[in-house]
Length: 113
Image 1 (cartoon, one colour):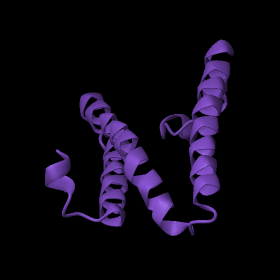
Image 2 (spheres, rainbow, N blue to C red; image 1 turned 135 degrees about the horizontal axis):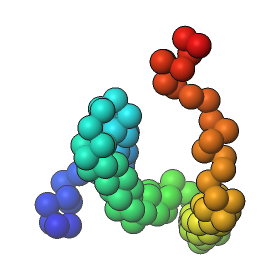
Image 3 (cartoon, one colour; image 1 turned 30 degrees about the vertical axis):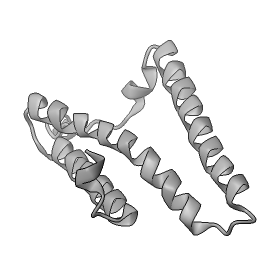
């Protein structure tokens, strides 16, 4: 697979990958069929492929004197984000997902009352 991706630059690969994920998210919001929405949301897993090129891109950005610290900081923020995301999702699940009932209703039939 890496042999097929080698002609692409890291920046082109990241932009195309995140654009594909953005289009998939827009499709999942705009369709009424839940199966199509679920399949398009599975494209979010593509973002996991961007970790390697993102770290390689960070290596190219920073000068040699700061490179080790900068790549370490990039990796640290990635790990902190994943831990915080898991904790926040756990807190939402522990609260019984009560916060979803506090969101405004988008059903147009209830607005006529």
